Length: 83
View 1 (cartoon, rainbow, N blue to C red):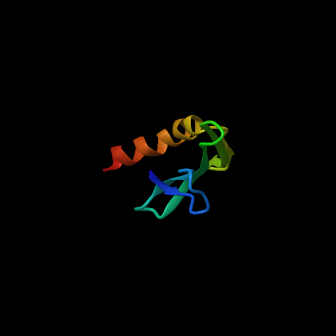
View 2: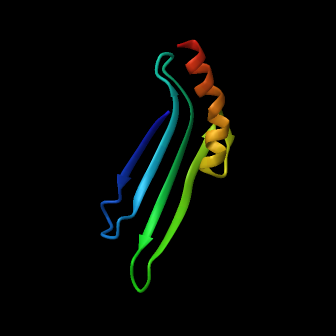
């Protein structure tokens, strides 16, 4: 599993992106990916919203990071057993 968090350079409020990939580096195979944006607003009052831009595992669409993790869990367990 590869997870990458990075700050949104277009904002000064701390908004950030979260990108995940379920990937087998030994087989060079990607099993799934998810992309999420965390929007932070500080004025007039603090507010935080999360937007899911994309989510799929082996072609099956998912609707949350929790579902992405559940669908990807099978591949993670296989990798650990093979090691």
